[in-house]
Image (cartoon, rainbow, N blue to C red; front, side):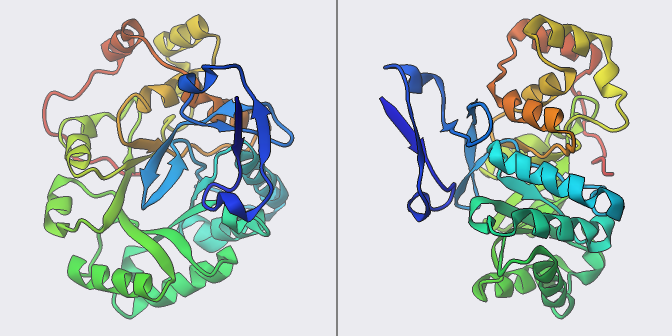
Length: 315
C-alpha cells in the first residue's frame, strides 16, 4: 500500500512524497504527513472554512516583539510547516503587526502550503476601517489573501456593520472566510450567521468554563472552536503533579497531555505557540495521543469541569 501527500490545499500543485506501508496500516491513521527532513507524523485533520486543516496549528502571540528573535521565530514556523502544522494563527495586535511580519517571512515561497488566520482589532472593524486594516495585514503577510479573518473581540461597532465589511472583503477575494474570537453564547446568538466559520477562545485544563454552554453551542452549530493558550500561561499548568503523572505513564510531556486532552473534543483545534524545535515536534506528535478514561477522570479531579455558567475568560 502506498500513501502520498502533497500540498494541503492543492495536491496536484507540486511533486508528492510517497511512503509504502503495510496492509491495514491506513486504518490506524486519519492522515500521514511524509516529511523531507523529519520523522513521519500522524496528523489528524478537520474541516475548517471549507478546507481540511490539521487540528494542531501554530500560534504567534508575543512573536514579532523583539527583532533579535526574528530569525529564530521564522525558523520555528518553518519547522512547524515541515511537520504538518500548516495552520498559522496571527493578528494585527500581536507585536502591533510584528507577528504578521514574522509569518510573512516564514511563509515566503510557501504560501500555498499554509492555512493563514489573522485577526482585526475591534476599533478597526468598521465599514471603512476594516478593509484598510486588512490591506495592512496582507502587506505584512506578503499575501494576496487571508484564508480566515477574525474579529478579535467585540468592540464599538455593530456586528451587522462588521459582518457587512467582512462579506465585502470575501467578495473581493481579500479573504476566503471570516469568523470571530472571544464570543460567548449570547454574542453568537446575536450574530446569528451561518457564514461564521469559527470562534477562537481561551480553552485549556485551567479554563474549562466554555464546556458548560459555549462549546456545546459551537458543536451544535457545527462551528469548529479554536483553542488559544491551550497549555496555559506561565508554566504553572504544566507543573501540576497529576498532569505530570499522566504524562509519565504515556512517556510524553505534560504539554502533549494538555493538547491531547483538548483534542478529545469533537470540532476543537489548538494553536500552541512554540519556538524551540523540540517543542514544535512534540506539539506535532500530540495529536496521536489518546487519553483513556482513567486519565480523564484523574484530570477532572484536579481541574473540575464547570457546573454552572461562567463568564467567558479572555487574555
